[in-house]
Amino acid sequence: MLAFYLSLIEGDEAKARFEQFYQRFAPRLFAVARRILPSRELAEDAVHTAMVKMIDRHAEQFLEISQRSWDETMAWAVTIVKHTALNMLEKEKRTLPLAEGWDAPAQAEGTVEYHRLVELIHTLPETYREVLELRLVAEWDNGTIARRLGITPSAVATRVSRGLRLLREKVREEGYEHDGQ
Image 1 (tube, rainbow, N blue to C red):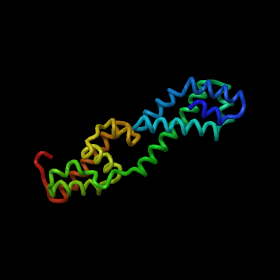
Image 2: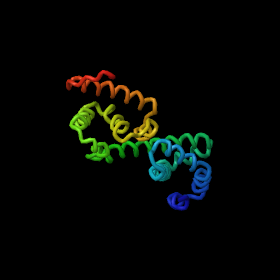
Image 3: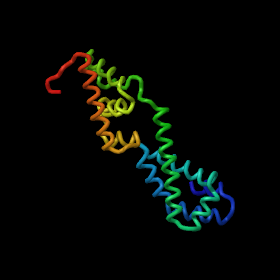
Image 4: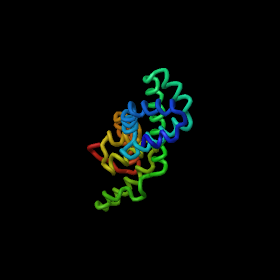
């Protein structure tokens, strides 16, 4: 991949600086993207996209920063990779919604109550609906949900708790009371 990036750069000095940068920081930049994105492939895409941005849009800035300090260069590059990964995650959320029949694994229960509960989950605000679908239906753990949504596991736990409270209220409004709460 380095050869591809170097082919995009003009000037021997700029090529040499970018090669040093790439050798030194590419694994760290991949680690940053991997912490944000749910798969290795997406993280690789994010780093590649960020590298191309650095070369195409920010070549002069890269050369200036890299001549001052590698620490500054790394911080600058991490920012670009982080924003690229977050943008990809947001785009993935918009373009890859949960499948229409997302509740298929639990349909074996075949109960009217179950389907009504799914309908009630769909009426919740997006913030709570999304985490409840992933937690209760897909049976993902908080860490996986956090990575998917780009939030912390504690934020997931909070949203699950609040979402369940709202869901309980909706169930009570439907006329169902449960002693165990």
